[in-house]
Length: 256
Length: 256
Image (tube, rainbow over all chains, first blue to last red; front, side, top):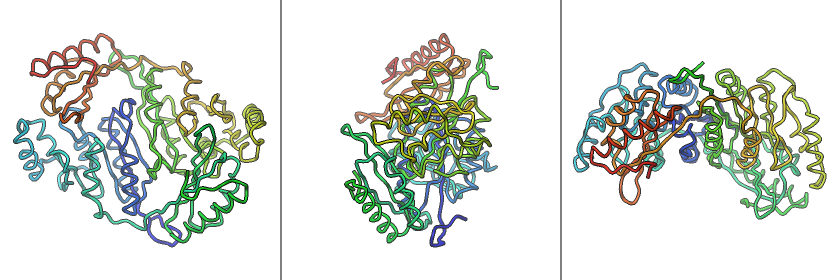
């Protein structure tokens, strides 16, 4: 079980993004960053992501590896009403359980579609869950998300996923949130890479990421300090600001 | 070796996205879709993607699984001059080869930095490659990408990756490109899911993806037909248009 500098347990998560539309390049994924940011607030760290095709074997492989390895596993995509929506079937197969119709989901879908053209067979596919699963409320459309143990089966459409995350807020056990602070400077990161490494080494439990950019015709970079300890965060950020100024660069506390 | 409906070999690729900044949610990945679209044109299909942390073990695991499983493996990120740039070290370890300074890369970096503050030790880190590797030209900045066997080690910054892809255009063997055609309608996908499944079944080698949206206060969807066969693409798309119109919906050939 991973632990941080203060020997506190670190809670980790993974995501499986399910969708040919991401792998074909047609759709730009937005769920990784939205789920990552939400997890940070819950005190859970996103450790890895896999993007797989709408394919039974590929989904099963990813789900079975990652649900064992992490505290939480999120999947997005493939829970709609059409023939290419096979996430529930693949995850049930991975878990070795039957696919069953969830009575509460059926009732929700029947009610939702009562005034929207009726609960057709295709629409009622969205009431299918792995046997033993619970529902995740979805305020945006009729079809709920699904929870089975540490697996959270979410929509692929980002604003629907957002609604499901909202419903889960505060319900998952996490550890200390990872805090971060940004310091920017108009400097090529390669000019001050030694300062970055030294500052990181001198502040236990802090990590410094370097994110260069090219704007307004000039190179610059933002440096992000990350740690669970608020004191260490302040000390490390202050040391970085001081180091940059000593090296002759104006430091922008908070980032550029 | 996978093959398509005409028994032609399908060439596949995977990507490993290396970067804490993606997993923290700070940065929205843009390389998956840009590499996927470029691969389509080369006749190569992106089959899977993994996003891993700036961590030796995580990078090695992903690289070793995916380089065996696919014709081509691309990595993005972690090849800059700072302490968190460990991609070359991790891939060399995965391959069981030494890290060496590539003489041509050294010369390029010395020349590039001659008028830009000098070739510091940190900057010369970007000349390090797995022993036996070739370079991928980078027109955008001094540091090249790296090719070792079927592995292509690219930048994390999307416009630099784009320049490296440009340098590789036409050099990788691929199969028939996957063709696609889009048909749209103002319809809930759940209304016509049977039509989609039936049309796909009746056209060998065609796949139909369904991508719903909510715009201008109305639900609609685009349906994307994908196949390597131009005749099948036309026949399947035409059947879908006819099926939608028969069901009472206006079909937008080319998508909405």
